[in-house]
Image (cartoon, rainbow, N blue to C red; front, top):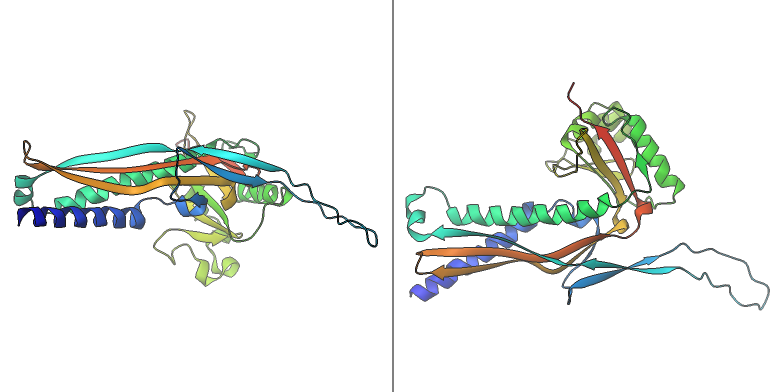
Length: 277
């Protein structure tokens, strides 16, 4: 009987961790190219250059584009997040300790997933909108928008812009960003509890994990989905083992993932000053 109960505990915990990771773990995983179930220590993403159309003579050979093909290798890394659940402590608590630890482990791995993607975005240096000693402004957004157009980055609904919470507050003070006369009532930033909205064909998302330097300059990133790759050999897995000498379960959450820069032409870094007034 005790073995059966223990197995039920383990299976329920594994399900709770997986659901928590899917629900509130990573904000950015679905905004980039993703490969799952990778076999090996690395994954390869294909980068294809631009093609050029040409004419041909009657009965002549069709000209080939000679596309430039490049392989981008992403190395996978293993991450762990574990904790103990004391059996008798559970009897003294008025909260579900198992659920608390499941959420904590899933959130920790979710933040690590986003950290990998942000690190890959930080590797792009080709296109930068300088801080200019100011925060997020309409002029900066329009400058970045122009850079995308000049680089022929597709405007296909797969552009994302992640900003800090300070920049999100500044965006909310821009009339064109929040006024229904410009964007329509369905695109208002408060229409969704996810705190994300569409503007200029881009989904803007606030994020707390963006890098900031010693001069209080926050780096925000506007990018196309195909410009960064994320690979996973193993999504979040959970191992729960009983340790009789401790009278406790040890819960180990783990994953094997990696992220890499594919095409920096599809990434624009917008630097914003967060110096206190």
